[in-house]
Length: 138
Image 1 (tube, rainbow, N blue to C red):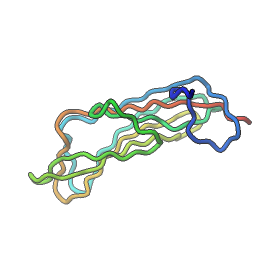
Image 2: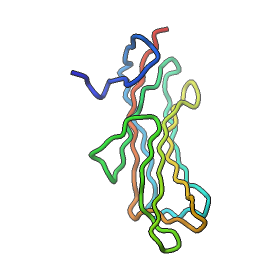
Image 3: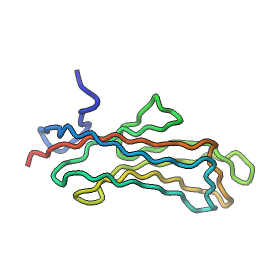
Image 4: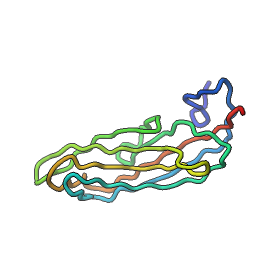
């Protein structure tokens, strides 16, 4: 039976050895975040790793739906806010990628596609990513 905490989802290598290094990063989006028209809100956290390790797909979850994790290095979630007093759906994107040999970045991005100010959902929301690293076979 597969252990989801040490499972590598996809790889270009025929065989892998898990590094047994499970890393976590969190970002909190403040309650009622107001984003100007055609602008965006972005927040990120950098996680140091050993340069020789590879990055496997992350398991990204939200405090507003904590019983579910989305597997991948880029996910899109929908929320409902208001724009000029009217209900307005919007996207929250969460990304995980390697920015340098020693750093993995977890970023949350909210774009406002509207002309007026977009007010996010009430209540802060915390995004968490859990990811594993692996030892490439070279």
